[in-house]
Length: 199
Image 1 (cartoon, helix red, strand yellow):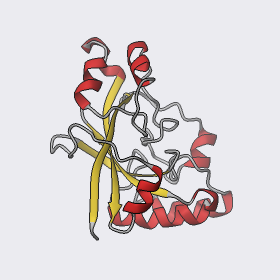
Image 2 (image 1 turned 60 degrees about the vertical axis):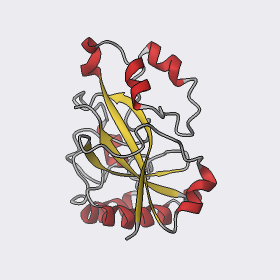
Image 3 (image 1 turned 90 degrees about the vertical axis):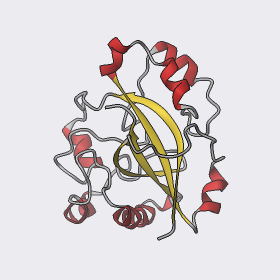
C-alpha cells in the first residue's frame, strides 16, 4: 500500500488524563468497544477542544481549513502557564492518503503548510481515526443501528484501542469502506492519524 502521511494541524484538546463524561446511552450508540477509557478523535465533538480564553481568541483567527494551528510553536506560545498543563494535551493530526485519494482530498481541503510538517519520532501515536469532510468522526460520532451494532462490535472491538482509535492501517481502510457504505449521505471519508505531542 503506497501511503502518504502529512501533518495537517496542531491543537490543544482536553487532557487525556481527564475522565470521560460520556453517558452510558451515548457509549452504546456511538462506540463499538465497551472498555474505552476516553474516546479521542480529530472530531472536536468527540475529543473536546481546550477552551482557555486567550487560546480561543487566537483560534477564531485561524485560516487553516481544519481550524487548527499550522505551527506547533505558535500553539505552544499561546498556551497558558505550566500550572494549567494538566488541563490539556497537545495533539498533532495527520492526513493518511493512498495514491488514489489525493485528488478527492484536494477537492475538499486546501492542504495546509504546517511546521513541523513531518511526524516527530518523540510523538506518541494514539491510533487512526476516520472522519468526513466536516471532520465528523465516522467511528465515534455516527450512531450505529441497533441491529448492526452487535455484529460490528464482534468484528471490530479488538481492532480498536482504549481510545476507540484503530490500531492498524489495514483495519482502518477496511472500516473506512464500511463507514462509507453505512453513511451514504456522507461518503467522503478520510483517514487521520492522531498523535500526542506532550503526555
